[in-house]
Amino acid sequence: MPRLGGDATGRQDAGSDPGYDMATGPRAVRRPTARALAAVVALCLGLAACGGTPATKNTASVHDFRLIEVGKIHLQLAAGGRSAIVQVETDPPTVCAIAYGRTASLGSIADDPNMGGTAIFRHTVILGGLTPGTTYRFLLTATDARGRVFQTRELTTFTTPRKIAFPGQDIAIGAKVIAVSSQWSNAYRASNAVDGNLSTEWASDDDGDRAFITIDLGQQRKITDISFVTREMSDGSAITRTFALVVDGRRRYGPFPAGNRLDPHIVPVSFTGRFLRFEVVQSTGGDTGAAEIEVFSRS
Image 1 (cartoon, rainbow, N blue to C red):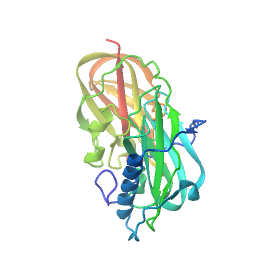
Image 2: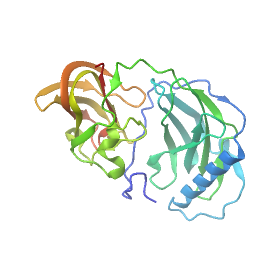
Image 3: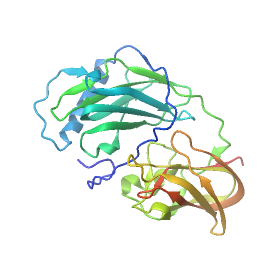
Image 4: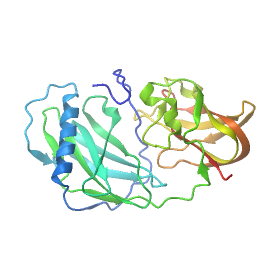
């Protein structure tokens, strides 16, 4: 089964930088409802069937996740409280999914797109669409090549940080993309960079330092701050280190340091413009792109 993005070539997708501070103190709460349990088990069994390895007969039994867990489960919270990253290692390799939500009924599911349709050892899962200052619960379920299902016995809870004071309105959300160097596929289309969702991303087709994207704000706006939230891949490629900005085809600003999903690194600027071309200046090469581009205005 092709990975998210509709491409069966096996390219990987975004991972995370293990250098960020880890959240501490997740605590266990009551066990999930039968409905949530059944939903996640069904998902993982379905994913296992797409893993490229013939599945043996599945049973209804669910094993303790600790039997395959290597080390600790690491949780990283984005500074703005809008996303979190869960990292876990399993042995044997598994197809792993995380169900999460505000209540024990959960309601959202995420997995590691690096699986690429098969089982892996190290899992990095982005929990997107979170609300700052809110408590969430999550449950891990994994399936190995033998069709065995493993699950954490209790829900784990965490609370996102309260929303930081952003410097105005993000006017890039919904902006029209009028030019782009390339895009990997429709699932990784350029408009993902301005949809206000850190769980989606624009990925170029191996543009490296040549990647760029131009957006139209619709009218001249006074810009006070900008951010380029890089996408990244677990092999260390596709990470944008610095970017530049060309305004209305004339004025060039930067280079500026790029941010990431846990720290968007908002850069203060001062100019008026409508057409903004974001250019990758220095990167680790590969399918560079952006999880999100943010443009702030106080007017």
